[in-house]
Image (cartoon, rainbow, N blue to C red; front, top):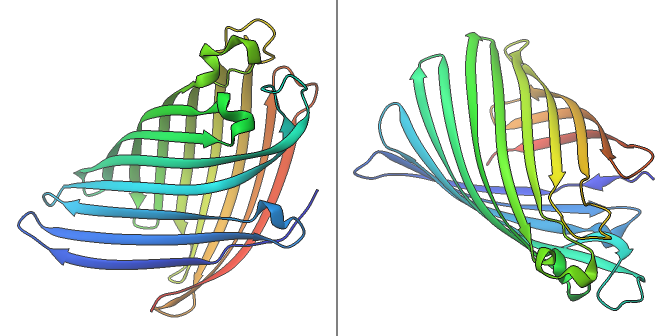
Amino acid sequence: GSDMVFEPLVNVNRSLTNGLGQLDLNMRGQGFIFTDNPHFNHGTLRVQAIQELSSRVRVKARYYYAPDQFLGDNEERRSGRRQFVTENVTSHIWSTRLFYNVTPDLSLQLLGRYGLRRYNEAFSERNTDFWTIGTHVGWRVTHKITLGLTYHYERGLAEGRNQPAFEDDTSYINHYLTAEVDMELTERLALLTAIHYELNDWTSGLTGDERKGAHEDTYLGEMRLAYRLTDSLQGFGGFQYSRRKESFEPHATPETNVSMGLSVRF
């Protein structure tokens, strides 16, 4: 199906100076409002701090909260009736990222992350604790072109792995890879292009679970144009196409997103 989504976003920033250097504080609230499918409406909250440790090193701590997000009407296992009911999830994610400028044109980032996904009672066997490690390398080829490469490894352990009666273990090992090119086309116009690949290996060992021995592949490509109208006003537009395929499903699921927006800084 198709829909139009409004994504209002509010960013609040404050910068301080302490004995270590500059400290940047940020709070961001974002809403996702669906015009045709309002049951998908949800919001997120992000709080973060970036501390400068030296001229080359910074560290970022972040907390991300996404409450009661509707995932759809899906088949539950707990009642034994296998009926379709509403599935919701609440996510809490804590992360730390280290930034290191190897040279003026080469940067390295190291990521560590821990998170919780908590589902409504009908799907509580999918409650998952997960952790992530990752790295990002950025290389400024010229003063107008920057290349980036990212890799994340994530391990998720779901409660269903210890509840074989439900045949629903969503534990996984995830590999995520991104390559991106950021180009300044003119003084006011910038273009970001990126390709993402995600491999999700389901680790269920439960007899009767469709995920046993299965995996999921996702390919995604995106382009985003940003135009600076004034020092405080920026317009942007983007295009995104993805294709997801579960190994136990006969067909892949494509998705296309087109976005337009305006950013105002006060």
